[in-house]
Length: 551
Image (cartoon, rainbow, N blue to C red):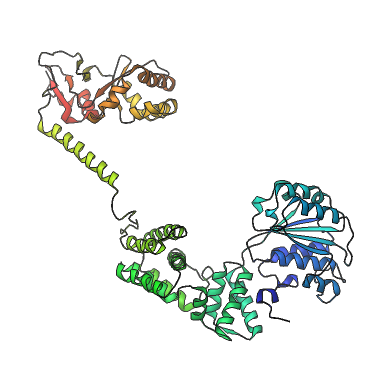
């Protein structure tokens, strides 16, 4: 007989051999003991976690000549036939290749026939989510009321793709990813039985690379034994996996801790020359940063990090070089890079940019988003600087009231100049105004829901004056366009209707620019007019530089 791959040679033959799924094995064994065997089961979970293997063990337990039994003998004709895939009573169907309605109709026609050798006819349908909608519909009735001698076992990695009508007729078992410790323990047994000496660090690396799948771990071990012979070292496993050594990961993290961009880029260049996979390096570095963060925030990480005490001590030392915020920023940065590298034609460039940006992180842990501001941002900043300069010149370089006040205007009346309103604060009703200021956020939200374009015009305004059911909204001087548009009847009516709905009051709205002169009438016999409450209120709302006190 030719060579048999390790994952096939070490496929579980009894329930005790299924690693990491004790909760499922125990349930199935109890079902057999208590004669509570269901007609349909759904085994779902990640690849390589024992779904098909458990299905075959369960089929043997049902059809063993000594059973049904919780411990199939693996010696009788029925057990041997199931192990070799020649049993007439256990049919394994690949739904990815037999996904049409015709195949399911053929299955439905054959389930009525009694088993030829054992007590049950077991149908194991692998990757069942690949069946078409029509095939699921054809299977539905048979799955709901099969003959007494039929058991269906559906296996899938994507249970969310299975119709609820199918799911509701099955007992569901969720297979978990196998822990690193459990995989290492199993690999040690396999390596010992295979006559290979594998370093503990190498087994840990294989187990982590398998990502919870025992089949993947056994395949990697098989490959490493073929590469290194009877003695397997950590360096040889790194070579097979294309992974980066822990020393290089420590050096990479050290360059980030010291903000040594040159060293970080040199490491990437050396990896490219050696023919290493840059994407795998990014993935390994991200995991290393994650380990540093765990050490930083957890008091005991021995259960979460499967590694030797020497490596763990080195990681704990290096974690002291970073703050928690810095590590969080680096992880976010390299996570984005690792995700984008999957689709990029220049993965090396993305990784090098991440190293550069990671070394430019601020002390607070915030990474720079880009190396230079975009042209649009520069234009907006220049425009904003011009507006600020113009406003400062108007506030500092002109006399109060210059060019704005009509010298012939006297008394407390409001005056309109060039479509602007000169507001007389002496007639203001502060308590009423405060009411609208306190409720302005709700009014803005109501306008947004009513008409979003009016909300855009209104967003920079604020209630500035209230007198005789007239609310004056004040705008910054650079919002003249918004002011004019809001004065239009249809837009102003939207605001007035929302105010009525919000406050229950009929209010008229008018608009004014903040740069317009604000006059306050004060009686002559007042000794300190600047202490008048109305004056103080005007200064609070419009600023002291825009207030003129007149006799």
